Length: 557
Image 1 (cartoon, rainbow, N blue to C red):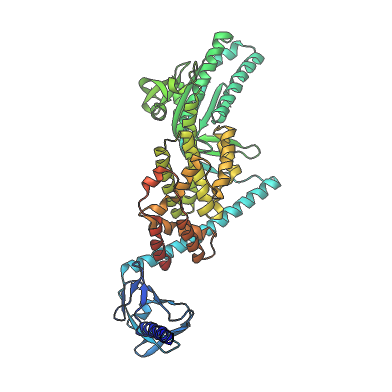
Image 2: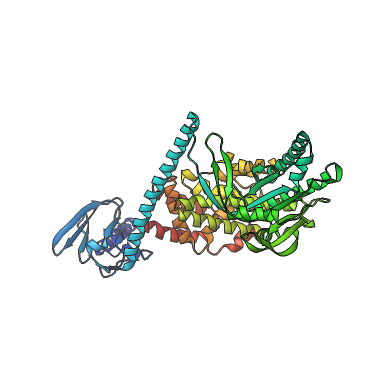
């Protein structure tokens, strides 16, 4: 028994001496610079082109104090004592200096740094400075927006007219309609009866423009003017305005067959850029201007009663959905010759049975998809306006992944639309600054404006709560949203994406420091699950291997 005890004591002493030797000889000292992973210090020399180097070592005992002294030409530059086995050194200042690393027992290591200045470091410095300037500029811009909103609210409460604002729209569709021979009709018709009949027409036209999300601009005598794509962005506006035009023609045709046989209208439509503003002082009137307005007016005057006459620009945007008849190049005042088309009806596969202009569910879904893409584009545009380009890149990558997964899972357009909205909300909740949080009330109002069913909005609200709370998915759509958000952990470009996510997360104020963020990412990687076969097929790297990448990035940020 005594022999066993003696052998055990000898082994403990041998282990102690070995560890002491390792520490004394400094065989386990590492450094990390801008080039990536940890590297062991060999021959006591660190050769680097990174301005900052992180020095790390394995202490003999936990929390053991170490003294770091940096001297150059036998002159002490700095001295510091730390219990953390890591120290950041400015390579540019320590170039040619000697670093003495000493513990409380007197064990010492000497390390020298050779620094090679590179243009990359200068560029990085400029980039950091530009980023900080951008953050300051965005903050001031955001405060200006808040101040302006408060001033406008005060004006509204005090009854003061807000300043006039104008806005340019690159793609709006303008419609003019005019009653054929109205001047002669007015000369021979009882005034009260004339106004009554005209009012019936305009009331029905108002119902049409409201139904198809088109903005009524004004009426001038017997002329009716409306526009799509203003004041809100709407990619489906050429289709919707064409539906309004066909609805007008159909209504007048029915009236002619019953009571008003001598009434007929011409309709002209053109798509292009316009400028809009609310003008007036006591009574504001929304109006639009531009060459597109003039061209639409020419389309109406060059048209034929009982037909919807459109320009080539409008035709190019609606030809996939409508049956059109080419008229050839027609002369237009001040414009020369312009391609013109008569819009005859919706194509049979997109129209309700027996109607030339009422869209069926397939057509409605296509228009709704366009409008949802507009909502997503507006969300991205809010980032671009404030120069938060990292958010744009991260969000657009998510949308691409969502589109790919939905397509491979054979999702319908409606389900793909829902998955994209949920992905946007998940991104806004987890990664965005507080100023970009998506208001569900605002979103519901947008969705109802594009004529989705109440059941769609109710279903969305239920899914949102589960997705944002990271609950177990209860539907295939929720599984796709989960995979859309998490697929980046399986990609080769994980390092690039996780750096962007770090910046986004820290700016949002969700994490108080980088260690807290780091722990959350490790927890996410260790517990990550992909639910769909499509996402698993897209996976390129096992997520646990990404922890090594995450560690390297954590050392650098």
